[in-house]
Length: 210
Image (cartoon, rainbow, N blue to C red; front, side):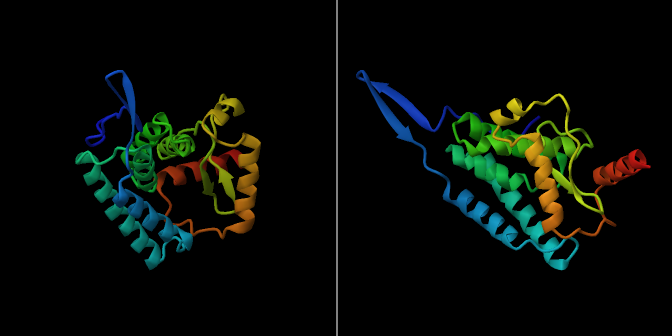
């Protein structure tokens, strides 16, 4: 799948052999990407309720941030591992399956370049990509409301906690406990205008419990 002009970098630390010496270079982070992520996180510090005018205004700012990040990718402005991580976080808040896949690719690039937080984000983006298609998530990072409680989106049973740990994802038991904590802490959003993938899951869960 084509994802802009994304190119694999050799790493954050570049080695240049000259006259028998190794010169260590550190790639500087893109300051604009850092600022875009800071704005993304500030928008979520006091997340507006779903369906409100403030919520839709946030989603519009999300789209504008993704558009700008795509421009930076096409201009080959991502160099440091953190750049890929920052870009991935912004695309993780995308609305389309293709945007979430791009988040996964960017997070994997960050992780491959040695940025530890990229591991969890790669797993979370991959899970969200599967969830948006109505498929089982692999690691168990995604939670959804079902009208009564928050629940962990259905997880591939073959995935082990050891595999989760490789990507810095907590154990399945811990994630189930987190779903219970979310239910106690977070208000239930309105369920009338849910996306199709969630509507299909709500019907499936209702049929299974009846």
